[in-house]
Length: 255
Image (tube, rainbow, N blue to C red):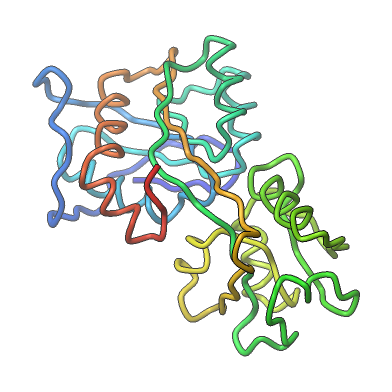
């Protein structure tokens, strides 16, 4: 299995098997083969990597390549004819545009997410709540406004009546998290799942009750998928009880 963070599609290699989970059966009972390419929102990195290991264990003839990036950038790749099989987005509106253009089949929402404040270990900026992000002395990282985590952050701040001047706007949520991990900023608005994935590298600060917004995640097979049967089987896995279990463990909510 190969994992790409960014916008390049590369050749994939076999991944390690995780025999502890079950997956969907091959479509039509056929043996699945080929190189499956899945374009997925950056916030899905850990959960989809785990699902990819299970998928390859169940289908040894399939090698999975994941490309993780911002949802708008992934949609642009699809529009440009990238040879991909599955698109999993953190932006239903962007997915709707891909479907309307004839590039994807009907999507299904498979998970939800919410935001949380991430701070470096030890919380050197003494950030205790959302209001602190409006303090000019607090260095804040946000996602660019055109990507889902940026749209969600803008909605949260608007709902709270706060104006925040970020020191950096990043292309996806993992880039925001990296700034926090490295201590280059005092705080970043990321998804709950990113705080979970970071473990002890960061600390999480909750948003005030009623201030958060929900992000829905749709998944769809692409109409020009080079491997449509494998694509359908992977989507089946995402929607299966195994998929729900893996996503829940990563901090995602159910639709």
